[in-house]
Length: 326
Image: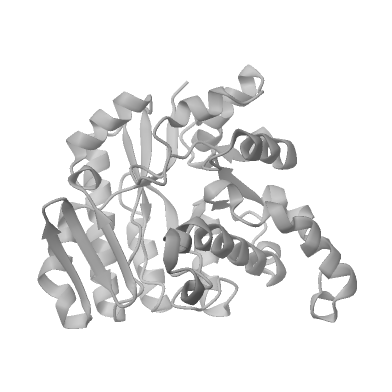
């Protein structure tokens, strides 16, 4: 059974060089520091080390943590902050590099494509191109696009194409809700990330996206964020609020339309997640290799009360089916 990590971030050298060379023309920057790199794009900043860039170090880290295969994904600031054409160039730099990494290490690395969602026509064109690249098996999408929620109709052609391709969509926060109140204590990550995931999932449910695309698979990070914690409140809202009178079934009926990673940081949270949505909807994730990730992702699963079949599914079988590796 192959252990598959579906939440693992990568900044390709090609993407780094493009940011270094051209981002300044569009209000961004990427600088090398004694500890690695600092990237800025508008209000978004991130820092990362060479371990996020160098494939050999990554493979060593995967071996150390018992991960056989990673799904590579870009993370903050992604590409939406830029004008459409430069966002497209950044997305293509990532997609081409991820495909090249897969070709060098076909048994170890796959990629989740990045698209310039701020320009939906360009995004759709790049999706069609990226779908032809070896090793790309999914779309990576922020939980909002420059403040535009994911049920916006401009994005629906992209969802339709993902559904037709059989590509799952993996969500990840970038610019989180409540950022004006979460600047201190790293709360923009600690609370902002799970809150924004819940808001995005709610828009996909309440905004009709999951009804319009019944075969579309969407994966939520950080053990589903706030969605699972407030699902009862969402259900109650559909019974009493006129804004939700259009709902034909409660939001909880959609829980199994999502898959969820194991980055709950508490065995009780992960165990509850398995009980709530079923072990077949849970996937191994590490958030490689941020300090807010899991240093020992396999052991996180081993500590749960699972059957052998459930354990094997979470560690890799569920992801293999989702990514069409079987």
